[in-house]
Image (tube, rainbow, N blue to C red; front, side, top):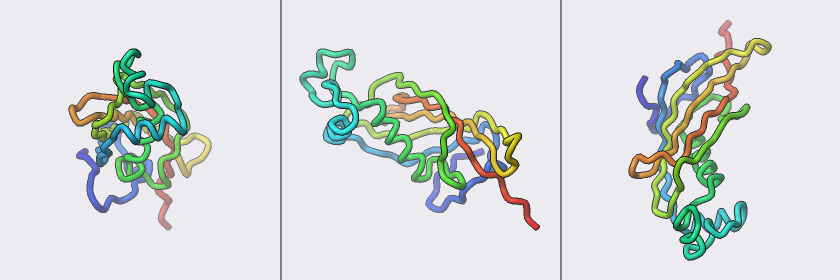
Length: 158
């Protein structure tokens, strides 16, 4: 399956997906002010707020909160990175940040369907497990999110 990046995407049901199917989002450019604004509101730690304070930390410079990277990932997926019918509804998952997101990074998300499980108790829906890598402009992975997403099944015609 090719990438699903186009101006007019159809929304996909669980039944439309295949293991190995890939999706690529648009991009988001991140600057220092966005990093500081998010941190002031949601993660007010020095390495997210102050360039000088950040130099003497594990990050060795200003870095976005992992939760900021996660929020950008969600935005990119909602805006077309994962064109799923009914939206992107999470039922759990795992997240990791292998490297910091920095001012000047231009992020995009590359996602792959890794498992499809129709519900045993509700025939109208199921779970798609999707692994999403958020990458910067150098192709470096800054976040890996494996999420179980609830999707509707295609309605029976009749």
